[in-house]
Length: 260
Image (cartoon, rainbow, N blue to C red):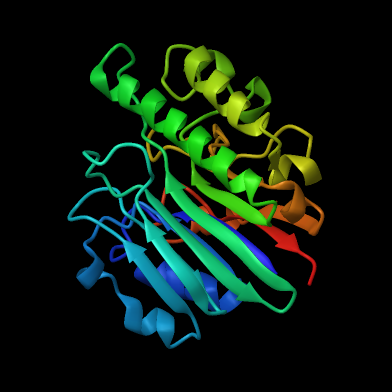
């Protein structure tokens, strides 16, 4: 079972790329972020024609998340608990039926948080506190689950080509990284790092200054696994080649595989 996280950076603008990649890779579950459209405007039909069920939690012009699944989705829960006033579409949780049982999959788009010292950074940290609280609840269920998405966090210096350039950025601030560590230390595992502990793996390259050509990237797209999901982990990877396609997202698909 192949589960992928992919910040598409505008699903309507990148639809051709998305469909080409889906046809080539045939993933079982895809967690999309930054779809940048309302639910009704999401291009479900061509994706469903490829055999996927679609769940969407979007908003006009900004943010938005979706989950595509070849298997039925038994439950769909939009919005992250903990703040009823939060109107930003950044979290979608589903329960998906598989041949070996149900697996809970979350597509999340964590706030960027820049500039540091503003309400945007405070919102990022508060959102992380809510995610930590939800992860604690899910761990109590003792079931297989994956928190997949664009975390907008560089966990370690090894996750940036030039970490010194990110010292004052919200993605690499000690407060952001501390929240990420607290989340992982609840008992979750970074699925990609469990399979690829070495340097040089990135999931995002800025559009400017030839960042992709110079491989000046960062790894901010993560799949965190519960112990029950980790027991089934068989592999992980990053589809870096997609970044070289015409009109690409600045992120690329990142994936794990679980045994049946």
